[in-house]
Image (cartoon, rainbow, N blue to C red; front, side, top):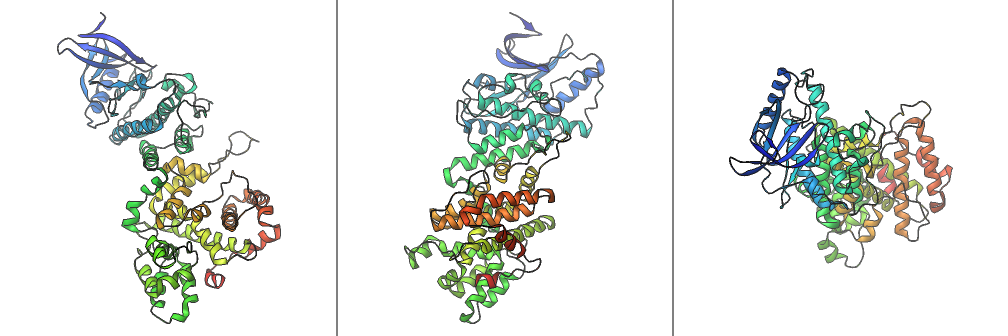
Length: 564
């Protein structure tokens, strides 16, 4: 029986370029432990002292997802730490060739990231995350072993300044990238690049190498698109697209788990608590007050009141929510279908209903700080512009107010994200930006689509959030279909129904305004693509598009006149 100090070596659990782990037995206690040690022996007393200090700092951390250090020391100039594995298996032992079920992997990853984020917050990087250093209990509890044990070659001489903030930040970012590779391995059933050493696989990615790592589409276990987007972002070849810290990856996976747990209603789980606390959106400054005052005046001014309501997106959505609840529709308009005009909503709810809706809104800007309030206002303006463009492009015979409201509803998820998840909204915007290609003459690296970026940040799609809210309001499946924007990757076909026409018209208006928001060099090409997509289905001409875009005013909205 081979020994290491007093420990009997039972089984090599795994080794990398930086660390190794052994299952051992302690004859004193009869207990099985896991020893983790560096592959590079400290060459000087200073290097050993630095290692001991780093491991002690890591060992002082107490977190359910970090394995406690039960022993540490040095044997023949080889330092080590010992962990109690209990009855847990390592992730290396758990992963089958066909991969593990996506919900299980995500749940394990969330726990591991909780521990990793806690360590990073304390200034401790793991430095060599490997599947054999992740313990998983029979009940699915995860603990990370071996934090700070790795002894990089340059650290063996004591040359590195491990205390520097820059070094800590870089090490933490490498940890997050390494964790993404481990999740990739667990889902795919095989290590990325067929390289079992995560540290070596990591060095094949930019900026150190030139490899591209993406989850294969043929995996033994199904991987939902949203989870695939999260994992692919974690190992993206573009550094700017990756998760910047453990908590951003953690939040994305938590979001996916929430949305996956309850089927189609899942996305609403991300918003429900916030909807109850701060409402869907805050009232625009002054508008809701004007509507409340007008609701106390003459009943003959319904058209004017509708115009004022439409100027405030929060009040507009609140009116639609109130009038489309099952109680109202069941009691007053059974079988008549959803209400998609504010004029009809006013007629059904009455002026008192308008006033109650206006007074129920959270005052601007809700819980947002000044910078995020400015961004939300910019989104409000952008959504209104898209709705006006859609009105201008609508085929003959369609109610302009219905087109306007369907366009607003297609932006419901986008607006909710900017209000309830402002930091995540900025991440999504950043992921969508193209990046200059470092090679001369090569096209720019494209950014993600909004939906893919939303999956990667929130764990669910922006449109899925909007549809979930619409369903929560009581809007039927036909409206839920209408308020889902046409994907940019999907071909635009001739509409078969009025609902399809409304959906296409609203999507066209949104895409037109999104095209105008692109860098100047890309605007013309984006508008040309839009014209090619919608020319035949909507009978759209270049002149129609030009006229619609020229009608965008630089100043105040003219919603009341158009809605009337």
